[in-house]
Image (cartoon, rainbow, N blue to C red; front, side):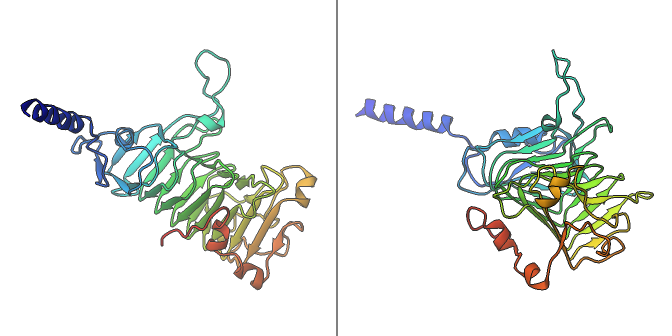
Length: 324
């Protein structure tokens, strides 16, 4: 009997020692100044359990976090919340022309991210993601590959290729975010809805470069957004097709005077004019006049515009209602 009791006690102690104290829905706190359990966001991400069936919050206090982060594919249901969007900053400074160690090649666009999200059901709130490299090539701030990703009240700062929505069939929702860049600074094949966002151009170039696959019904939808520009910027296109069937719609947006009359560019390939899905409806502002728009783009009717809802756009593979 005594031996049995000892064995049971040993088993209980072993189980307790082996348990991960973070296997629960409690909030993790990160503070660069050392006033929380974690000083780096990567360390907080590291202790999260794989394939969580509960919601886990990582609360990040004000500070500048120089980290190159990956939220891996085995992490779900994580929410990263900044204390103050303008003072809680994740930053890194890679760009495409940095030489890779041991080679003569640059690192290329897709390795330059500051934050890469591979997991599903990830939410970011009130935080800044920045690529702070010099203007020496493509430099991604946010690279997404997961599905059902939500960004609320965030800032995405960079130059060329700031936001890369990197996987076809995945769904992204941006609400009241600020996104800035120079060339093609929102690009990729994902389905993404931008609601009440500010999109700022820092150079005469192109805002979007969608690469929506032909069999995906929706790409980028900008709803009630504001397109602005730095002083002196006066020749910006709404988009050009990175791939032939690029889908981009601006609906009820305010387009600044920096948007060129043609609105859309064919990326130097006339064939793209027969396949690219470029549309507008109900836009206002000095850049919204449709009289001289590229003839291969489309102005939607009221009925057509009314049929484009978040529910329909996000029903790509399953029903998803962000925020509900």
